[in-house]
Image 1 (tube, rainbow, N blue to C red):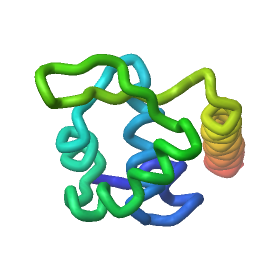
Image 2: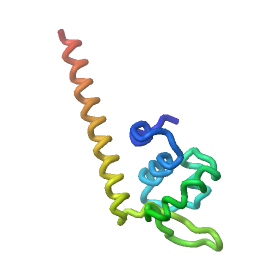
Image 3: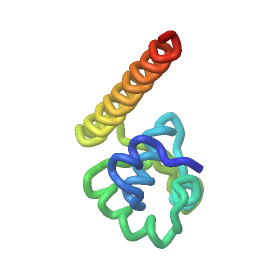
Image 4: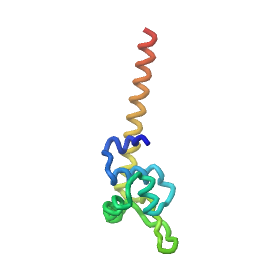
Length: 111
């Protein structure tokens, strides 16, 4: 699996992978096990960084199923809003660079 622009920009670390997964799937809620699995990290790695997600209110509990809590990205958090804006900006800049590159290739092919 190829890393996203967000992971490429910030580095391939568990915290970044979790953020990337949650931002890409912000419409859904997940157990911690699902978050670890879908982020491509171990549960041990998730449990090491999870307190920071709770402390900074990056995630919120959406519901409980028995003893299991499900979490989703807390889109009301100013931190999350800034991260989403940055991710969008990175994507736009990348897309613009691809368009410029393709235009350059077409111009070179015509010459």
